[in-house]
Amino acid sequence: MSTLSDTDLDHQMVTKAYARWAPVYDLVFGAVFERGRHAAIAAAERIGGRILEVGVGTGISLPHYSKECRLCGIDISAPMLRRAQERVAEFGLTNVEGLWVMDAEHLSFADNSFDVVVAQYVITTVPNPEATLDEFARVLKPGGEIVLVSRVGAEAGLRRSLEHWFQPAARKLGWRTEFSFERYLRWAEKASGMRLIERRPMPPLGHFCLIRFGKDGGTERAHDSEPVRAAG
Image (cartoon, rainbow, N blue to C red; front, side):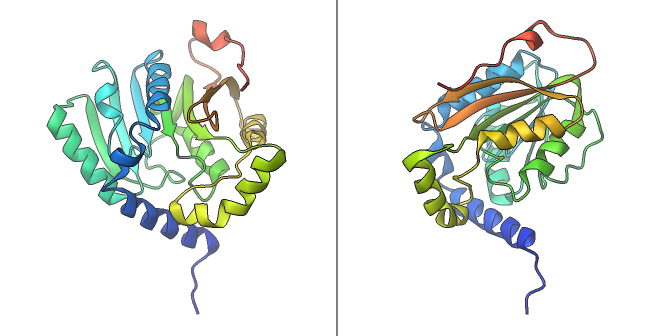
C-alpha cells in the first residue's frame, strides 16, 4: 500500500508533467504566453533590484530582463532548469545569480530576500497555492511586489462547467482549470501586510491575468497607489 499523501502524489504528477514539457515548452507556449511574460517583466522592472522568478522553467524570460536587475530562478523540474542554464550560458547572462531545483512551497531563502517575486503560470500548478503565496510573501522585502501571471477560472456559466469537467485531465498536464479569482482575494485578506494592487486580463482569450500584490512597509513607491484594474 502506498504511503504517499495526496500532496506528494500531486507533486509527482506536476514534476513528471513538466519533465515531459521541457523539450517542447518554448515551441508550444513561447508565442502563446509572450504578452503575459513581457507584462510581468515590465511590472518587475518598475521596482528592480533582486528578483526571484519562481517556475523559471526553460529560462525563456531571463534574457528579457534589464541587466540592472539581479535574477534568481527556481523550478521543480530539473530538465527545465538544464535548458535554463544553457540559455544563461548562451546569452552570457551575468546578472543571473543562480538557478535551483526547489519546491515553490518550501523556498530555501531567508525572509525579506527579494524586491520582487515573479511567478508566471505557476500558482494554478502547485498543490498548495495559498501556502506557496505565503512563501512568496515571506521572502519578499517590505515595499516589494509579488507579480503573477495566472489563469483565472470562470465564476459561472458554460465555461465554468467545462473547466470543472476538464480538471482531472488538466492536472495530468500540470495545471488547474477551475482556479477562481476569489482565492487570490481571500489569500490577500488573510495574509499579513499584503494588498492587491492590480488585476489586468492577459491573452490568450482573457483567461489569464496579470496580478500584483504589494507588501506593506519600507519606502512607499509612487505606483503603489495605483487603483486596482479589474478584468473586463
